[in-house]
Each structure stands twice: as structure tokens, then as C-alpha cells.
Length: 94
Image 1 (cartoon, one colour):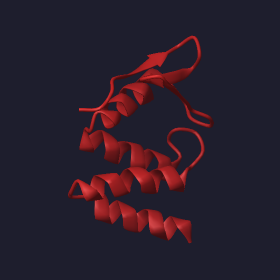
Image 2 (tube, one colour; image 1 turned 90 degrees about the horizontal axis):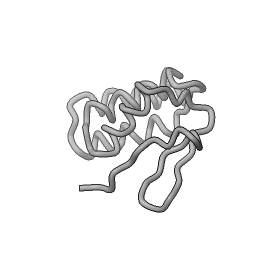
Image 3 (cartoon, rainbow, N blue to C red; image 1 turned 180 degrees about the vertical axis):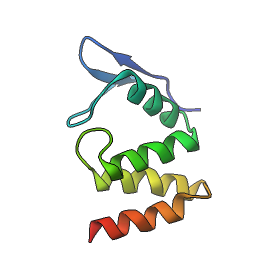
Image 4 (cartoon, rainbow, N blue to C red; image 1 turned 90 degrees about the vertical axis):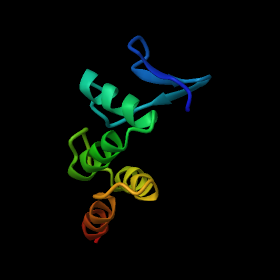
């Protein structure tokens, strides 16, 4: 199991062990933070929601690199919708 990740509201970032993770261009609201936390712990449905959110720009700016990263991880773990989402990301990339 991975390291526990938590939100540090004073710095608007997350702490993962000793490494600080900051989020630029991301709407770091409580729902997104909870979703990211679940994804970081390996929840495949949360991982897919993050990938879709980055594809659609639900968390601020669209980010196809992050969308592909999360969707690829879900595909490696054999999530049933991951391959289809990767195709959508590929089409959006042009």
C-alpha cells in the first residue's frame, strides 16, 4: 500500500511522505482533494474520474498529459473503460 497523502490547507498542496506536491491550474476544492486521495490509494474508479476530469477540463485547464497518465494507469490495472478513454484522449490530442 502507498504512502498516505493528505491536504495541507496552509500551503494549498498535498504532502506525500517528505515530498510536497503542488497543484497549479487545478481547482483544489475538497471534492477534488478527496478524489485525488482515493486515486493515490489505488481506487480505479477515482483514477478514471481524474483522467476524465483532466480530459474535459473539470479541474481548471484541460491537461491531456495528466489525463493520459491516469487513464494509462487504469488500463494497466485492467479497468474496463480505460482503453476507450485512452482513445478519446488520443483523438483530443489531434
